[in-house]
Image (cartoon, rainbow, N blue to C red):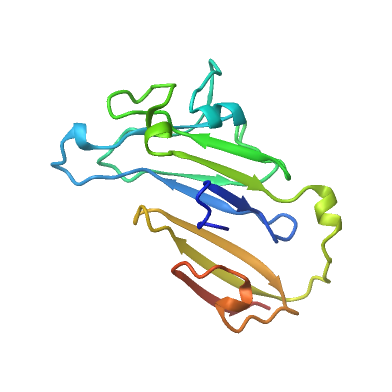
Length: 198
């Protein structure tokens, strides 16, 4: 999971074992009671095409809505699981090797705006690159599944202190991390804990 990429590109499901998927929580802005309604940020987040992402313009008459953040005094979050199937009818499915584009074109005065908005003025957009295509998986070394070590990592992003993303990854017992540096994780305010499982 890379949070240092200024192009807003996030790799997901990289290095995961089969049937293990990364999750992202989209946490809406929340304000204390007494904050003026016009000062509160509100957003609609859409899943869009690459062209819509690049131009900050939603051309699809029925765009896929990912989240509606329209209750600024209530804690609201939306969890996305990056898997290629979903048990929910109409749920999001993320195919390996594909890119998924999310933007918000909402503006301060128009929640339902479809052109520009905060996508243009505040760069409110992100790309999720889902790993891995079947041919990429064939190039990886497959290790025998034995008892494993669980590594839980919490990454806190700096721009919005309330935004937290958690990733849980299973490592084979042949890998014995002694510190976060052994996990090939960039040093960005990361806290790691390691626990043996039998």
